[in-house]
Amino acid sequence: MSFQQGLSGLNAAAKGLDAVSNNVSNAGTVGFKGAAAQFSDVFAASMAGGGAGQIGIGVNLSQVKQSFTQGNISVTNNPLDVAINGGGFFRMSDGGAITYSRNGQFLVNKDGYVVNSAGAHLTGYVANAAGVIVPSSPTDLMISSADLVPNATTAGALGLNLDSRATAPAAAFLYTDPTTYNSSTALTVYDSLGNSHIMSLYFRKTAANAWNVYAGLDGAAPGAASAMTFTSAGAVNTGGTVGPLAFPVTTGANALSITLDMTTATQFGSTFGVNSMTQDGYTSGRLSGLSISTEGVIQGRYSNGQSRDLGQIVLTNFANPNGLQSLGANQWSETADSGQPLIGSPNSGSLGALQSAAVEESNIDLTGELVNMITAQRNYQANAQSIKTQDAIMQTLVNLR
Image (cartoon, rainbow, N blue to C red):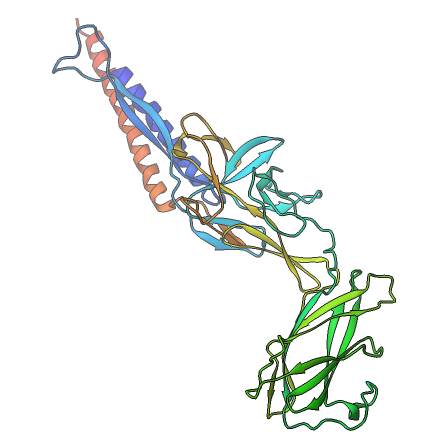
């Protein structure tokens, strides 16, 4: 009987050594999760049941259990390298076959899809034409390299101060004569083709706490004046809106119609100054960079200074991650033992946060694995010795006369 027990011990020790060796060999594999061999004893079954003196017949490999503990996170210089800090798996699609991974080393292929080294597509929520992410069924994420469409200016806002000490000019307003107005400034605006235009604003005092505002485009003569009045405290009391002012554009684009909000304008006894200036138009832009937030939102940065959401990475978790089937290449697949996949946005529920330009290292502790290797070697030697002892006993029995 000892031969069978010793042989099972040899096999078990070899399996344990295999698991340790596999862990050591993958100590530098990004996203790798270590595994440990678990064993159970074996007893012979009998119709009468076992007695108090029953002796087992060896050991058996029960399972190879993976450890999904967090690995260390190291920084890289690739914005598409993504590390999961917490629970969850990346959801990958390879021709419709869904797999799961902790390896966040991604790149963009020739078709613009975000893929891993094996060519599987990263999945998530896509953004519509306006850059709004629409949560739905996860699909393959694509980074579009198309130019950002220009946006014509329709609204703007100015924060400025008009000098209450100024006097009303005597001569009639003439935009080419600075003596006929008190102050001026300019704002860059854009038409529907993305062409920039300079909108000049002229401020002329007409009476105490009363001003006229003139606006002209690209050096052309301004249109009719818009009146502004101020309270004795220096605040606008006309609602603060100048416009809409329509300007003809000779570039072939649609005419501009811009509303300027000047609610924050003031009239104090200090020199004229512009404190803030905004407008909602921009020219076309090319993709110049990417960033990924902790919630997995992929944002594109464009050469015109604009940014737009391109998609959102989703994560998947399972009630029993140890029930997943390992496929190699840092990929797992769903099984009946793992439970249904729980899909959601990163940094929500049981799902971890994402860190861009970083990767999760293997969770292998080399010191512990080397100790496990010594233990497995001792177990193998001890079981070999039990077989050797049994052989010596058998040899003694054979030699009896």
